[in-house]
Image (tube, rainbow, N blue to C red):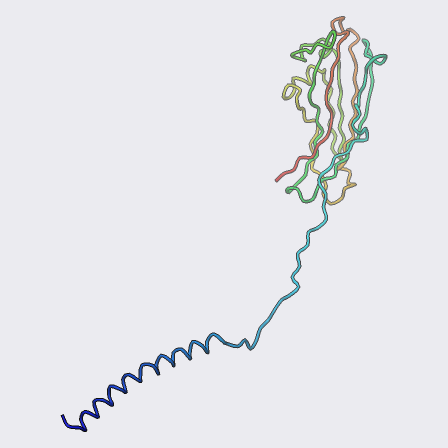
Length: 217
């Protein structure tokens, strides 16, 4: 091989070797330029705020507080033919944040009868006192009114064996707390039959009366 030819082959090999680093350096320069891009325009919506509103938990009030609505003991104990009346007002304050709707309910519950020295009567509807004591309960809530009169034995047998008897259920107004529908006026009238037998004497009865708010989820 002539001297000129060897020189030409050597030059070609060096040309190939040099070409590779130049290409790599070029790619590196491109990557470096991409990681330092400059933002030239933007739009922002700042000061986004979320606050919770003001609300309270549902409440029910009674103008009797926690006292009994009826207390016929001692000198006020019933005798045949005795009558009487008592009243209580419940006010509802439905919470706006609880469920979709609020309903007010007036409830008679936990009817229990005793005899003799306070011995419980297992089935209150079998008590002679329960058979001869008539109890009329009226509930007015807004434009709605319910009134029913039965013996205590019948009240006991009417629903859930006296554990829970719903007297009135109405939808409440969440926007106006003083709305008429958010108030329930309850009247209780009683009468012990004139012909109540001696077996009805020396007996007693207890029951719960109250109001509650039922929330529809």
